[in-house]
Image 1 (cartoon, rainbow, N blue to C red):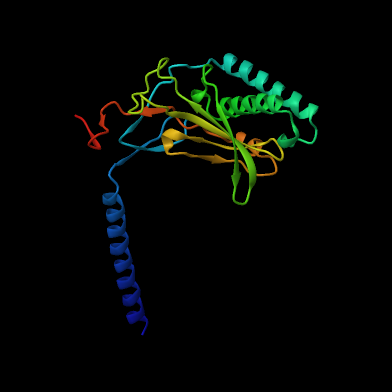
Image 2 (cartoon, rainbow, N blue to C red):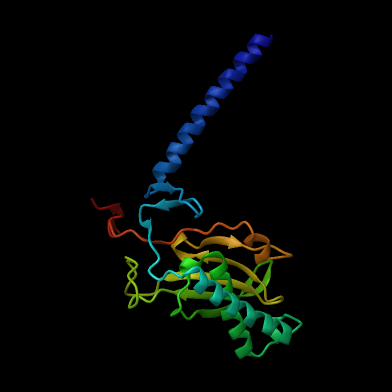
Length: 222
């Protein structure tokens, strides 16, 4: 009886392996682009589609420059949080609210993704509502194609650089996302929000569009 059971388990395992193999093959073939994985020193490993490549940041900051900008942004945020102890952005004057949001977004970008910081970038600020999490502000930053070339097929329009979300009710950042990663990013969790993640954070590498990619025909040019 035991031998039949072992045979049954072996057959089951073989069938499961075959099904998994074909499932992976099917999932891969259904995607128009292949993934390439990169493990870069001091950067988070990422899966890149063929239409994106890792690149060198054209506006690199020295450690001193980054820390100076970060200290300034943190001081602005702390000043407003002290001025309005309720920390509810809906009760703040519009000018103060937007000044705080810009400083908070700069703080988050410099802490988590400094390669995506641009001194020239002025965010578009919109108030939004989540289904369960309540209201928040979204700050969208965009590339300026007159100042840098990103090999983008969208050079005649706007292309997102980075997005930062800030909760209305407590003025805490709730996360950020990278448009070049199709809006994928990180959500911060209570009670510490960004501080709970910052200690062990490894940044994503700086990425741009692949100049060797044919956007019209969805294929790599060789």
